[in-house]
Length: 323
Ligand SMILES: Cc1ncc(C[n+]2csc(CCOP(=O)(O)OP(=O)(O)O)c2C)c(N)n1
Image (tube, rainbow, N blue to C red; front, side, top):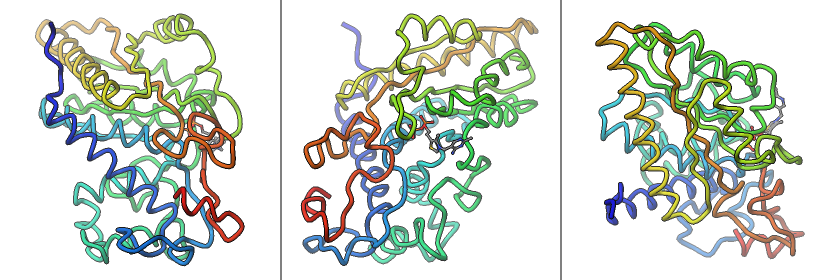
C-alpha cells in the first residue's frame, strides 16, 4: 500500500492551521470585540455593518496552507495570486498567522489586543478594504476586478526562471473575457528562461447568485477543455477535510515535481519545446465548514454562502447563536 503523503501528525497540524485561518477570516467579517470569545458572544461584540466574502475564503485558506507545505518541502520561490481577491480575509488572515502582517504593521500585534485591531479594521472606515489590496503584505494583484489573475501570474514569471506562481482562479472569474483568453499564455512561456505558473481553478460552483458554467459541465468536458488549452489538469474534489488534505498534498507534489521535471529537461537539453504544464482543479463547497443551514435554507455549497452567511443583528437572534 502506498504511504500517505501527510503523516497523521502533519495532517492534524495543517488542519489546525486551516481552521485558525478560517477563524481569523470569520473574525474579520463579524467581530468588533471579544476576539478570542473569552466571554459569551453578544450583539455588541459584532460589527454593526457586515461586509466581506466568506464563500471563497475557506477554499483559499485550504490552498494557502498546502502551498506553504510544498514551499518548505521543495524550498520553492513561490508567490500566491488570488483571482477571487474579494476573499481578502483569507490573505490578511494568513499573513497575520505567519507573522508578516505584524512585521509590516507593528500595531497589529500577535496577541489579543492586536487581534481585536485586525478584526476591527477589516472593511471599516479608516481601516483596510475587504478585497486583497496594495496594503496587504506582498500584494501585486488587486482583488476587486475579476479577470486578470492569470495574466498577472504570467507577467510575474516571464524572465524570472526560479519563480513559481500559484494562481487561484475563481470559476466565476474564469467566465470573464480576460481570464478565458489568459489560459493561452502558456504559449508564450519558455521552460528555459521563464518561471512556471500553477493555475488552481477553484470550482466552488457559484458566482454571487448564479451557478458557474465550468462547475456545471461534465468532468470529461472540463478535462478536455483544459487539455485543449495545453494544460495537464489534476482534480482534487470533495468536502471531507481529512481526505481532501491527503488528496491536495498528493496532487501538489505531483504538480511541483511535474514542473521541476519539465524545467530540468528543458534546461539540461536546451529544449524549448512547449510542454504540457500541470494545473489543479479544486472542487470544494462554497462556504466550506461554515453554517450548513440558516433559517431552514441550505447555505454551505450554495450561492447563499457568497458573502455573509449569517445576518447577525437584533432581528436575527438565532444567527448570533449560530455564529
Ligand atoms: C470584472 C468583474 N465583474 C464582476 C464583478 C462582481 N463580482 C464580485 S465577486 C463575483 C463572483 C466571483 O465568483 P468566483 O470567481 O467564482 O469567486 P468565488 O465564488 O470563489 O467567490 C463577481 C461577479 C467583479 N468583481 N469584477
